[in-house]
Image 1: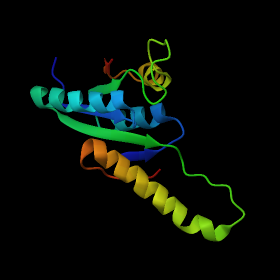
Image 2: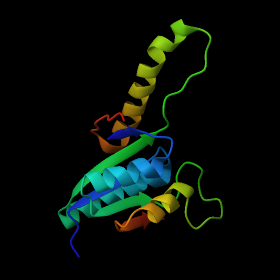
Image 3: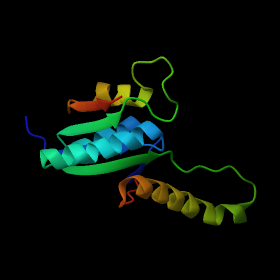
Length: 58
Length: 80
């Protein structure tokens, strides 16, 4: 699915919760790459905004 | 712990594409359904030339669709 949203974490969390997903699996970093951060910004936001378990692939 | 439905967000980065493949394999082993999601920024354009704008939004959506399909093989477009 494709969603249009300026806040990717919002669309991701909404999609997961509305579809009854019990796991979110995503990369630790995206486009901007590993810049010495443990987690990319959108992955961090997803983790902060949902109670659904998140599996982070590094 | 049993997972029944995995959501797999991706962008066009290499790492997220690898994570998507791993996610598919994981879902298969767990006997779970997997849904891919690709989030694009909202379409906005600044122009004084209105004729230029007509096709641009459709092309933007078509390009986004093609990009998502490259990773997932099948996608569904939602607009909010």
